[in-house]
Every structure is written in C-alpha cells, then in structure tokens.
Image 1 (cartoon, rainbow over the protein chains, first blue to last red):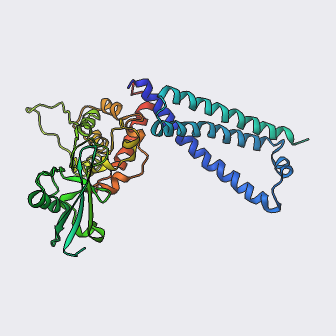
Image 2 (image 1 turned 135 degrees about the vertical axis):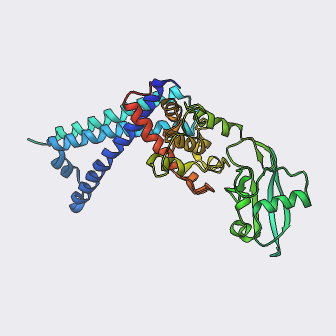
Image 3 (image 1 turned 180 degrees about the vertical axis):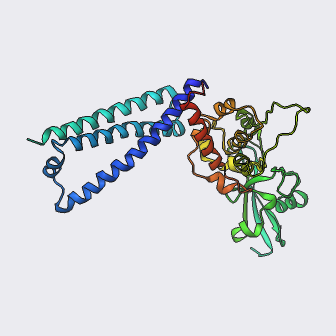
Length: 119
Length: 240
C-alpha cells in the first residue's frame, strides 16, 4: 500500500476517535438538556424558545452535527468494507456522499432553529 | 450415553465434508489430543490431524473444540466436554486441507508481511548488546515473545473473517515485540508494514485473541501499542 493511502487511513482513524470524544460530550449535554426540559412535556415551542436565536446553542449544534458528519461515515465505511462486496472506491464515494448529506441536513437544521427564535 | 465414554464428532473432509462420530473411553487426565490420537490409532487410521511436541511448546495441535480454538495437547477433556460431548473442527479462517488439518501458509506469510523477522546490524565480531531485563521496552517485548504460533488467536479473530487481508493478532503481536527490541533496525519499514486498515488500525479491540491465547498473551494490547506508534509516525511525517 502506498504511503499516502496509509496516511489517509491513519488520519481517518484518528478523526473518528477525536470526533467520538467530542460526541460523548455533545450527546451528554443534548440528552441531559432534553431530560431536564421534558419535565413539563417537550414541545416544539419550548425547543425553539430555548435554542432559537441563541448563538451558544447554534455553536454547540454546529459542532455536534459536524462531528456526526465526520464520525458516522468513517464507521459506515468500515462496516461496508467488512460486511459487503461493494468495491472500495465506491465505498469511499458513498461514505463521502453520506457525510455531505448528514452534514448539510444537520447544519441546515441548526441554522433553521436559530432563525426561528429570538427577537 | 455411558459416563465411561466420550461422544466425539469430528469434521471429516476438506471444505466439503461431514461430521463422523466416535465413542472413546474416558480416562483420567485425558487431553483432547489424547482423544484424537486414540481415534486415529484404535478406531480410524485415516483421520488426519497435526501435532508434534504434545506438551504445549510447538503450537501444532490447535483445533476448534466445541466451537472454541484451543491447543488440544493442554486442554483436558474434563474441562471442555460438556455432557460427555466433544465436537472437533479444524481452525477457522484457514483453508481446510483434510479433517483437522488446515493450510497455515497465509497465516505465516502474514508474519513475514508484518516484518516479523529480526534484523540486526551487528556482526559476530561486535560486542553483545547489553539490555537490562528491567528495561521498559524489553519488558514490553518480553510480554509478547512467548507466542508459539498455534493460530488460535487468528482463528478466533472476527476481523480476519470480514477482511481476509487483515494481518491478524499473531503477526501484529510479533511485530510489536520487534518494535520494542532495541537491537532491531527495521524501524519505520516495519511500522509502515503494520499501519493502515489491513494492519493495526483494522483491530476492533474485541479481545477474542486475548481470550483464546493459550499462552495468556495480550495481542490486543500489542496492537494498541502499534496503533500509538504508527499514528505518532504519521503525525510526525515519518511514514512517507
């Protein structure tokens, strides 16, 4: 295997671990907030009231969805490589596509909620 | 079934084949290898299996015993034959040759691929290297050096079943002992050989190899060490 391919595999492996570390924090905050907020019944108004217009929550969810967009496709790539007969170059393409889709959808959702709230 | 007999089902044939059943007298301190040897000598001389030392040194006699890879010479029947039943298969993840014999060529080729042989730069005229047994790197190396190459870890590893190009726990464990051998000069060439998804990064850390190693070695720990060293080398731009 070429040195550049080895480097890419190593960086992807590292990126998945680092994004996992970030996700542990993000998921904990996300779930904890939900559990605290759901006490009076979780409604869309409540969510928008909390997140909408808040730059802190926007930043938080942008980090969250970016980490998901890095973490999940690398894992999916490994799963497809080990469990399917799909050729490697197609697996890489599918993983990049998956990353773009969840990245764009996630960032769109985070900005969408931000735009719904505030003054 | 009588308590004095063990019911033994053995895979007969190569990739295609079927189980054949034998009744073997139960003896005290009997090993699984004793059982197989009894069948070949007393019941069916056409049975093929592999062994050499019979005392847990050579690593030849590993088989799948009731679903788990084991060294059969040191496996007592009393500890594994639940309900007096033994089912013996050849090792997983290696091509079946005949009965309990597998082709271990790929398994050992992967040791070579992982640069598993020692390469020094001293001649017979040089002084011997002095390495203290308390040296931290020597301790790491010594922890993995007793591998007997039986293939039990390799046959247990799920990653090899999914990715046949994966080097496997035995070859990577061997590489790790040499990475920590100060006399060895292969260095970055070995790290490049064990890097990437077909090397140490492919390990899922499920530790089946640790569970099944008859020598109680820790190949998963060795692979974790290789991960650290290869990543450091990549980040420092040394693997190019």
